[in-house]
Image 1 (cartoon, rainbow, N blue to C red):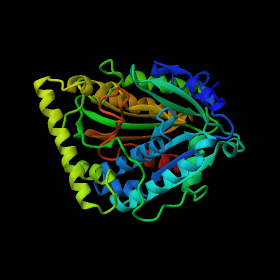
Image 2 (image 1 turned 60 degrees about the vertical axis):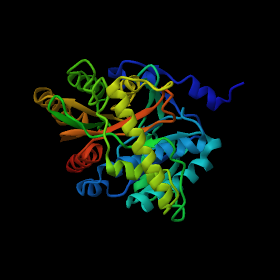
Image 3 (image 1 turned 90 degrees about the horizontal axis):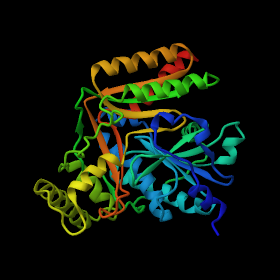
Image 4 (image 1 turned 30 degrees about the vertical axis):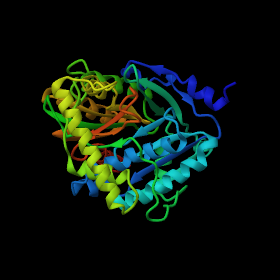
Length: 389
């Protein structure tokens, strides 16, 4: 017989039309006793300003990889935020999640030269504030669904973490989480229609939620330039590439701290895989059960480029006309007291991945803007909200 926690995960609502993402009836509250395990980069905007986009995204995806690997499961609800992530964790997995977050903090400091903060926030304390953590799943492809969050609890938990509450301390230098499957070897994905734009729109506290749901549906519709929702990854998949920074970060993530021989071996293996896939793709030739053409197209269909995390977050590729319409609709909603928003434009997108096995079809891919993305959009939103305070 399934436990109540397993039953909750098994029966989570799954929807296929993203324009319905703000519909409250789709969501179910996390069971009592669960927590949010979350982390983000300190001063991510400064790191991005210095060109550390890949490192920031690698750290954010690493939080998800470390916790899911530590728990040996990939069905827990999580959300990638560009410079961080949040994972919903059941009671029997809290200690293992805390240990994984602690080790991720050490890894980010040791290998990436960045500061990561982390926290474990009980859902009961979120509900004591009159907020909630409610979850649904969006079916991004036949093989992958991504969790969506509503209720305001994630946002409150994030603010508490940034204020120094519920902190998970860093492990000692040199300790390592299990980051198996974490990858960042893809080339930047250049805009095809004009601009890759990262958008965050959050409902204004006490604002018109019906109006906010209409806003979300409108923005999703406006981004749907080519019938793919503004997807920044071509339908045939992203361009294959040999990115030195990504290769080095991946090799370090899969090696012991300071183990240069292991890093060299892992780096050579990653480089070999990248070259082999490139050759097989150009030849349109599978090897064993691995079909590079199918894999690249599955990368596109499995990509998490839009989400709901107490508000709308999306990184889309649009032309100048649609971008102007999106800006106008967001501006109108902000003036009407419906939302706060941040929007950041750039010429390309970046992809970071979690691939449990290249032979499985449930590989997960996270997209952010290549020159600031969600972190810059969040900063703009925060500045807008401060002006209205």
